[in-house]
Length: 106
Image (tube, helix red, strand yellow):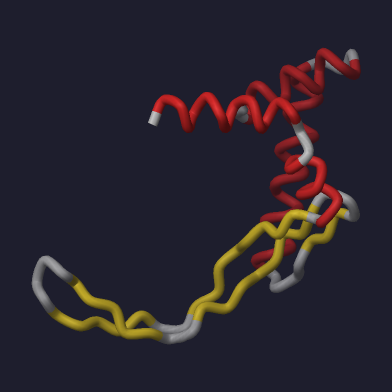
């Protein structure tokens, strides 16, 4: 599902104009992005958390040149779903049906 599809669905379900929904969605993303760049995690009870993860310094290999390179310690944004959200997805019959269809194609 794309951002445009999410905006359209919210507009349909709430009766709010798409432009206003888009502004709210964009504001939401801006708040999350700003908070995380300031080093703050964002928590949504029952949905999940946007957290900052630390990646340790490591040695990697450039296989095309066969050389070692150092990747410095850095931080990345990550999403950790809430347990209730994970359980709901696991129990979803729609997800199981779609997963079975994808497995049959492979």
